[in-house]
Length: 330
Image: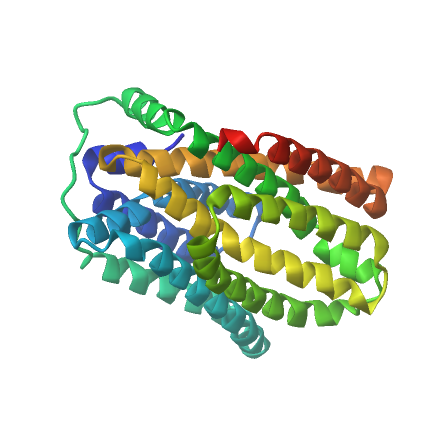
C-alpha cells in the first residue's frame, strides 16, 4: 500500500519519525536473531519501514525549498544526498569488514546506533506548511495522487521508461557477482569491487546534475536504456578481467536514477499529494524489481547466465526502439 497517503493526511514528520522508529526497532531485534523465523519477522518490520519512509522526507525537503523560494536547488541537493549516501556506503563496507573481524556483532551494533541517532535528529526536523488532506480516506488520497500523475502524459511516459531501465538494469545488477565469478574473478576480490561500485554510483549522481542542465529527461532516459543494452552486450561477450568494465558502467548509470526521477516527479506533483505520489511511484518500481529479479535464479539454473544476458539484450533493444519511435509523445 502507498503509505505516503498517511504522510500527506496526518503529517510527513510524524510518519517519517514512525518509519525511523520501526527501522531502529528492527535493527535492535536483529541483534538477538537466532532463528530463521525471527529473521522473517524482522524482515516484515523492515518492509513496513520501507513503506513508511517512502515519500515523507522528499516531500519535506521539496516543500521546504519551495517555501524558501529555492525550488531550483532541489535537483542539486537530492543528487548531493545520493553522492554522500554512496560514499558512506563505500566507506561502511570497508569499516564493517574490519569491525566484523574484531567481533561479528560490532557492525550490527554500530548500525543500530546510527539509526537511533537518525531518529533523535528527526525530532528536530521542521516541517513546512502544506495543505493536509486528513478529510480524505486513503483510497481517495491515492486516487487523487494517481490522477495528478496521470494528467501529465510526458511524466507518465518518463516514469514508464525509467521503470523499464530499473527492471533491466537490476536484472544485470543481481547477477554481477556470478558474472564476475564466471569471468575468473576471485570471490575474495568481489568485496573490493563492491566498494568501487558505490564510488562509481556517486560519480553518476554527480554527473546527473550536469546532464539535467543540458538535456531533457526523455533524452537522458534514452541514454540510460541504451546503456543497459550496451552493458548487456558487454556482459554477454566478455569473459575475462575486463568484466568489471560493464559493472562499473552500470553503477554510474544507476547513480542517475534517484536524483533524476525525484526531480522530475516533484516538479509536477501538487504539494497536497506529494508524499502519496512518491509512494505510488516507489511501489511501482518495487514491483518492477520483483518482476525482473524474482525469477533470475531459476532462469540462470535453467538457461544459463549467457542466455539471460542475451534475453536482456533483446528486451532492452525492443524498449529502446519503442522509446525512440514514441519520442514525439514527450
